[in-house]
Image (spheres, rainbow, N blue to C red):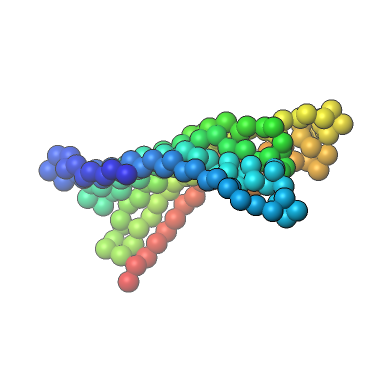
Length: 164
């Protein structure tokens, strides 16, 4: 992780942070009567092995802008979707706020503002495809857990906060 603050002009301040994770898990010993090979694959690859985040926070007087770029590497869910490698994805979060009074702030923003979705489930068995959803027989189109960032797409909000 690396972070650095910048003074921009007389009154503006930009704080930056860049983080990268590389994680590896290995199951080295197990009882095959208790755990399957698919479950071991999930333990080792269900969470992306690579992840990066870039955070930019800018402040100018009562105005604040926070931007977060998130990258999730590839992952697998062998127990539920054998053989499918879900691709890496980017999501972007943005928060704009204004301090109206000393203890009162209003903000608008969004998570995953460009509406990224995980890869659809690979339809390997024609009998599972439902034309109405393009998904499984239970209506599932995306991985049931949504992967590392969910399957709901963009989320928008308005926030009012008071601090005392």
